[in-house]
Image (cartoon, rainbow, N blue to C red; front, side):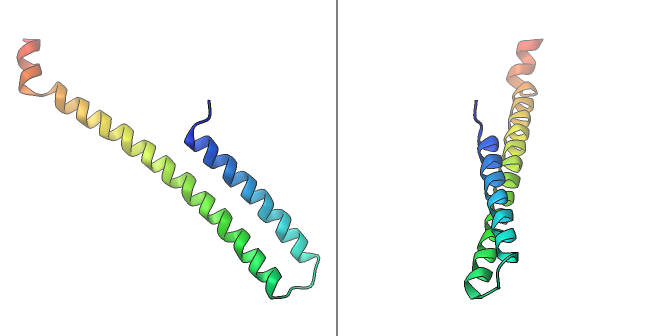
Length: 85
């Protein structure tokens, strides 16, 4: 099953591979303004992919921690304490 993290990782890997391909092509050619702009665009795309993956990972951790905190609060509530007695 595809998760958001796997999709983001796939996008990152594809954009990273494309950036490497573009970088190798640019190194084999003379550098003009268009080549520099293409290289800059590829680097920004890879950086954006890395940022997306990092944000997804942080969001998953935050959601898990929030669920644990809410369940702990419910477990320690007065209503649950009386029910467990």
